[in-house]
Amino acid sequence: MTQPAFRRARSTEAKQARETAILDAARELLRARGVRDVSLGDIAAEVGMHKSALLRYFETREQIFLELTAEGWREWSAALRADLAARATAGPAEVAGAFAATLAARPVFCDLLAQAPLNLERNVSLEAVRAFKLLTLHEVALIGEELGRLLGLDEAQVLDTMATATGMAGALWQIASPGPRLRELYTGDPRLAHAVVEVEPRLHRVLTALLTGLRTP
Image (cartoon, rainbow, N blue to C red):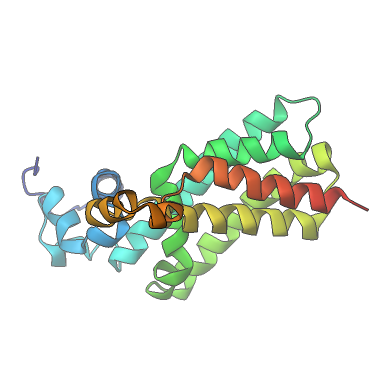
């Protein structure tokens, strides 16, 4: 439901509250529609603002989504590290399973992962990109500590694992979410059955193979 129109924020606290309201609205729209089908006007309407007023708080639609991608990185990293930290020992399949389960449980984050390098990072300021990249590097380093402890991976191997996991999660989510018409086509023709994928099991298999290979001398 569209909320009453906001008055312009006059204090730091009011501005932060406005930004939070915009992010909350965008997050809910993404859950319902996906990144490609949510416009800046949709977000503005959801919070009861004119689109031009919303641009006082975020420079572009893409900046809003990049903020949510950063939020997703923090949340996913915390969940994955908690899972891995609870394991005294774990092999490639178990670690891959933790990656796959925590990513598949976050469809909006997977959608954003696919869009970040293609669109989001290209339509914001360089400072916004810098802040986002530094945040992701920090979370990768934290996850890398657990990968080093459990599997003995070095820095280069951690980066390869993270790039594969997040890149595949974003791509697989796009494939697994083709929309009603394409899904009907794929499920209605046995020759196209391969086009219907499930994110978690496919990601689990790919990451198990990768991590097994990285541990092979």
